[in-house]
Image (cartoon, rainbow, N blue to C red; front, side, top):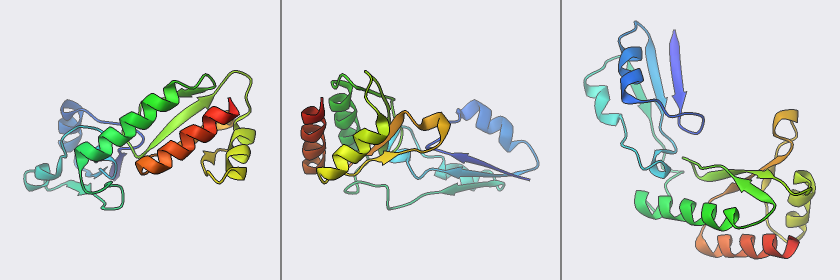
Amino acid sequence: MILVFDWDLSIISDEILLKVLELPILVVLDEAYIEFSGLESRLQWVKKYENLIVLRTFSKRADGERSFATRKGEALYNLVKELPFLNPYPSYSNFILCEVTSGMDAKKLKEDLAKMGVMIRHYNNKELSGYVRISVGKPEHTDVLIDCLRRLS
């Protein structure tokens, strides 16, 4: 049996992870988004627990700095939070999930932004149809995104 914990879905506490590592299973931690969490990696735990695998990636690191990447995500979150038709959720990854509110349609918001040259993600499934996902980008990309969102409000 293999148990996989993925950072963009959940964060597991040290206490729970230690209990899981006592089980006779292989445990895989996907830390692709850990730079955005402000939490410590469990990479060093691999030396102590032979049933633990920790996955990392370079593609999610913004400019190679955990503090610069985290600040960009926090800055985008704070800007989006000011918009009356988006309800952003705190994020530990390089994107922010936002509920589209105030009678605005999420799919139309995506389409209107696309016409302005800004791409965000809209989900077609029933559970997330009223949500959009905004990726954390460079400051100049964030400026364009926020300007376009303000024009739509």
